[in-house]
Length: 257
Ligand code: MG
Ligand code: MG
Image (cartoon, rainbow, N blue to C red; front, top):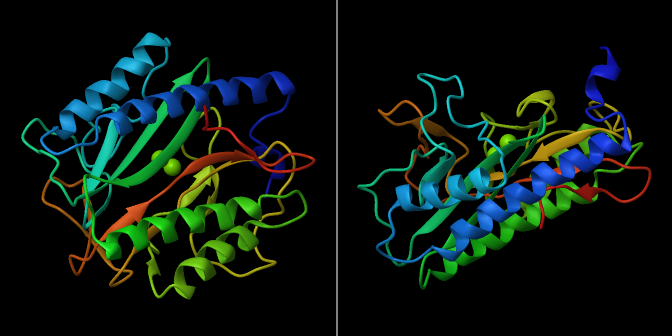
């Protein structure tokens, strides 16, 4: 493998550019979070994120993303059993008790930020609350391993072990990934793996870690819209993501304010 291809940023200026794309992405997700209440449509959430990107002269790497057909929106909004890739709609209203996973990407001055969160609408069940906590905890467990000298398998295994220690499942079908000038670059970083295996982490690597967690089964299926991925058994799911840089020291989270 040509490892140089796996180092996504090659200068402090490029790191700053990634950080700025990530900051704008965080602002877009904050705008969405502020709207999360019953009666709001998922198209309203999309419009709010799009507005933030437009204000900052950024564009969406989601819009037009190749798939079964070009992805039609700025964010994905996936509710309850929907794990990822839910398409915003004017007809889809949030309800109290829903858990909503929102994923957003930002392309700014040649670099991409990619992050996601899940959150409750109104009062949610203790079961849903625990799922959110475990999924976010799994992201932090993975970030903790984003240290030069460790390997992608250390990151993957940390996420898997955290999730499975709580009795939940990680998807095998969708993974974290390198992020840089493109939203999806190498290496793939699955949410399962073996410590000590995989690619050596080096300063300058930027990776989007994204635990996708299911309560009942690791299996998923795709809805008739050909984008939305749901749990095969209809059980609740959650998704958290940050784009993170490996540095000489501590991991640097790019997709924060
Ligand atoms: Mg994402
Ligand atoms: Mg991603």
